[in-house]
Image (spheres, each protein chain N blue to C red):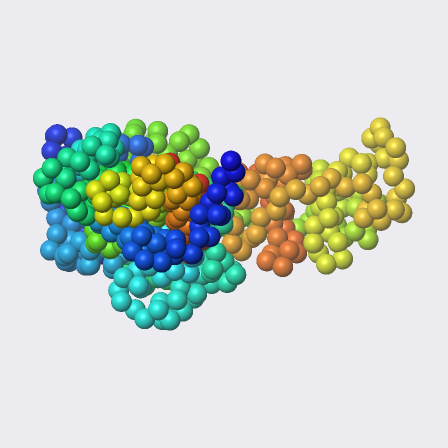
Length: 393
Length: 226
């Protein structure tokens, strides 16, 4: 655990970068410092490994005051990842990763062996070992930066805006990778970012800092989005915090309807009958393996409508279908993903699939609306419910 | 009058290759003075450059002094020191060192100071001490510029070491000075060509040093400024 107790950083000119910061960073979890520029988030991070020394208060790692430790030895026990990766241009990738083991006096073979393990861990192919940093893409360099920080297996990892210099697609994959790594490694990660979406995605707890270096709120992402402490936090979170909060609620609580699913071998007449019975305006046509093929508008099957008639004996699989668009995975996706799928669906309905890609069912907008409404009514401080959406009503 | 023919005729005479005034002895004297002067200059220039570049302090002062030294007329320094120490190797070395220190110092300083701040931050953040940052990061990354400064200095020293002849202690400059005095111009040409060849050899040597001394991760970059 890293504890800040009334930690202040006052520069000789009188400028206060961090003002009486008090918080407890739990071990084995990811804690994000987030805030606009000038809020002292990077300063707070750099005080942990004494790249900056605080001027007042106490900062301790597992009960040991950092000021009682030689900064150099302290830093060798803390992984450090910076924005531009900061790889040594004159060293190969392998030797860059082995930097801290070399500093700790490991034998060359052992240090490089460890570096090879880490390359695999962070998803770098072994051919890259002998390359130099300039030969790697930004995303690969950042992976090397993470591997280098993990080389000596430190319990604490400090990450200072590690992914902000890469493009959004690469950034998302690096974030996913970090979440995957953390689920295996359980490091105490302190992560600085100015991007609230990134904070919500990677953080177990989030400290929002306001300009002047003061703590505005320290909470779990769900709590933060549900109950911003004040106007500053609310503004900082952005206007769509409600929608983003849906990421914390599982999609499996949604009611899945299966009565409007038709196999592709069904005839137009049979499909028309199903549409008439269920009063569904859209039918989802499935292939032989129960995977989605596309939407069929019920109106096309109704002979009273004014369009080219459909031969009632035609299998629906041979009719022109509307693309089914996005789907969501019932087992692991969130309400946000389901909502997204519904919004993007031409039929206005979200298709839920199992892990193997077979259709679990369709979520109608009314059911989705009810689930979202239920989430909005759970804000009594208990956090997201795992149960049915009706529970809170 | 063909310069090449004169050079070949001069260098081909057997007596040029024997005795205390022969080419091997003069050549060895020249290389010896140059190497000694360059060694002393490197010691001064590289250490001051590393110190000022690493700490970021005194860099302006060092660069200013280097520029003043650069403006000194070499012959002037030579005779000035002769007045104090008499004829000998000291005035020659003093003049050559004053010539060689500025490019070495300025390039070393710029090379070390120019190492990306992110790299230094990463190095310190991983737990490197100041010395380790200097030897493991700053020197290797600045090496192309340090070598450039040394090369510039070495070529200037080799070309200028001819002044040793003015104070009567030999070197290839003797051929130029004596040849002028005796109006034996083939000797002047012969001495000059040998100095040029030596300078070329120095340039090749530094090319090899750069090829084998600088990390492949840095070599694709430009060679910096002279």
